[in-house]
Image (cartoon, rainbow, N blue to C red; front, top):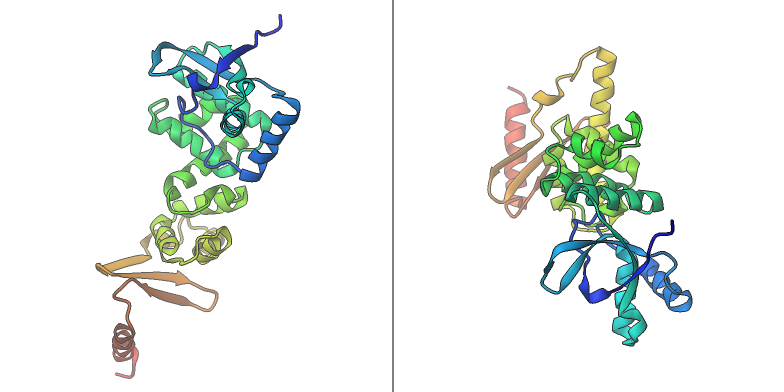
Length: 289
C-alpha cells in the first residue's frame, strides 16, 4: 500500500526535535539542492513525527530530511512563494525517542554522505541526551545491521569524537583513517597532549591542525610497534610524562622524534629569557661534573 504524503507547513516543523548527526552543511551542496528543488520540485519527501502536544508553534519533529527542509525554507525566504510554505512529508509513529533517533541515523546511512566524525559523534550524542548509557550500547542500537568490524570502527570514531570535540576547527574534514589513528592514541594517554597541540596551533585549517598533532600520533604508533616487538603490552608508554603545566601561562610538551626527543614550551610565559635560563640549567645538569 503506497504511503500517504502530507503537505506540512514548514513553520510547524521543529528541525531540532532530535539531536542531529550533522556537524555542518556544505554550502555548495545546499545551493545545488535548492536549485534542483526550484527547477524540478522535491523528489523525496522528508520524514516527520507528530508531537503528542504542540510545542509552541511546532506540531511536528523532523526525523530525516534536514538538508531538504533547510533548502525549502531558504527558497521560501528568498522568493516568498506559497508553494515553498509547505513541504511533502511522510508521517511516522516511532515507538520511542530512541527509535526516532535510530531512524534518522539509518536514513543518513543509506544516503552515505555523513562524514566519519559525524558517524562517531552521533553515538556520543545518543549517550549525552540519555538514550543509551554507553557508546557500545549506542553503536549497537544505531547500527544493528553492521558487522563486528564496522561496529568496532564506529566505537573508535565515537571515542575520538568524545576526546577531541571542540578542539578541531573542522572535524568533519577528518578522514576515517585519521580519526582511527587518533582513537588509537587514547589508550596511550595522549589525549591531553594532542589537545594541547591543537590549542597551540595558530592556524585552524584542517591540514595545519593535522600537521600539529601528527608527531604525537606517529609517536604512539612507534611505541605500539616497539611494544609488540618486545612482547610487552605497553612498553612503558603509560609511565612516561607527556605534558607539564608547572604554572599558569606555561605548558611543556614532550614529543619523541626519529632522532630523539623534543620539548615544546608554549604559553605567555614561554619567553626568550626563560629559554636562556632553561638552557643554562640543562647545561648545569648534563655538563661535565
